[in-house]
Amino acid sequence: STPIYNDPSPFFGFGMGHGYDQVSWARRKVAFVTGITGQDGSYLTELLLSKGYTVHGLIRRSSSFNTSRLQHLWRDQHSLPKPSTANKLFLHYGDLTDSANLVSLIARTQPSEVYNLAAQSHVKVSFEMAEYTGDVDGLGTLRLLEAIRTCGLEKLTKFYQASTSELYGKVKSTPQNEDTPFHPRSPYGVAKLYAYWMTVNYREAYGMFASNGILFNHESPRRGRTFVSRKITRAVAEIYLGKQDCMWMGNLDAKRDWGHAKDYVEGMWRMLQHDKPDDFVLATGQTHTVRHLITLAFSCLSIPLKWSGEGIHEHAIRLDVSPPTVVVRIDPRYFRPAEVDLLLGDATKAEDELGWKRYWDFEMLVRDMVESDVRSAKGLVEDHN
Ligand code: NDP
Ligand code: GDR
Image (cartoon, rainbow, N blue to C red; front, side, top):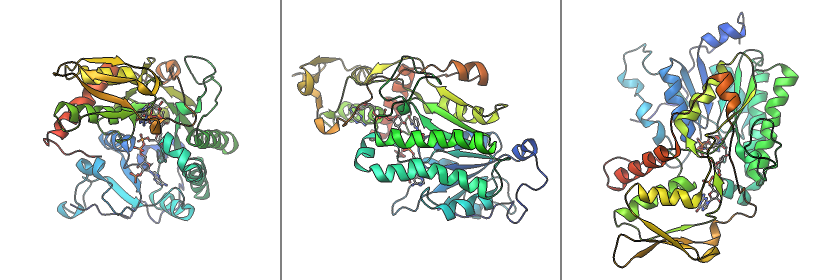
């Protein structure tokens, strides 16, 4: 069924926030989510709907279908009895580069919570589209904060900003926590730094409930295909089934703190339920190289690897076939002009103050992704992204 966009909000026409304080405003449970079609947007929407929220999502106009990660949450309005409360998910066309559109949507939906997840989120792409990344990831955040203020909702509506461990970049100390200095290493990281400080500034200047989640890498079967984890697990599934021979990779030495997106969206929600706005790290406290991720992904399918060579000549051979075959090679095209070598997060503050606890560990995450990619490579399930 085709989603219906731009449904009028049940609060359309009311005086904005009239007669409410922040507690009664929050009780309405109306969320506005940018980036709803992305990995985190889809898991967060599931969580919010399960908690009884009405969810308004911002989607971009695209020539191809871009709501596949939300498809399972969608109920065709025409098939529901009227009036119906069954479907609490509404999608609206918009873009973080369009201020008037954002003001109009905030005015119409009157959210109690805004989650700003929209971004040009690919670090490597940000070197090629630096200005656009700055416009969306940096200025886009300002536009959304201003839209809330323009609507007079800055004392009522809570705001979550999707900040990132990329802020740490060239790390000053390990593990990284809320007090570790920032040194971003990409146009993406620099744009997100602007957004981070804008969020802090609106909190300090206007008393807004505005919080930064400084999230370390988190992945899932819904992760975009060009991020390293998903690129690896898809390739491993295809190699396992004989559909692909080899994967071409960039820097295998980079270390990341990889968690599961399902755990992290819970943390986002908890930040906005806290008694005060603040900034929180979400991380697993473990770090692994890209090379280890590849080895583990193959081992989930009992494929033993042997690594050989050095630098751009490094490669991995699978040993369970005769003759042994090269399955991993290096292509310098995937190297970045400036790299973030090591990320390792300390989420003690979120654990202590928000009661946040991760469920998934690294091995469970990789297994979840490999198994899902094997199912879709076999054609047993639809690949949603
Ligand atoms: P995705 O790349 O999966 O999703 C990005 C979302 O932003 C998509 O819905 C995309 O729409 C939307 N978007 C992109 N540009 C615009 C625009 N100009 N206007 C409106 N919407 C736009 O990212 P994730 O779900 O992985 O991440 C969510 C947020 O968290 C991002 O801001 C990311 O930078 C940040 N983050 C992510 C981490 C991670 O490890 N996943 C870690 C730390 C921070 P479309 O589907 O149409 O492309
Ligand atoms: P990252 O994620 O840049 O950390 O940003 P990505 O998965 O793209 O890269 C992780 C590391 O793997 C190395 N790498 C490769 N990366 C990609 N994409 N493709 C390759 O072939 C490859 N080979 C090696 C990279 O050099 C890098 O070191 C993600 C995004 O989700 C951001 O939006 C988010 O803010 C951060 O995580 C936290």
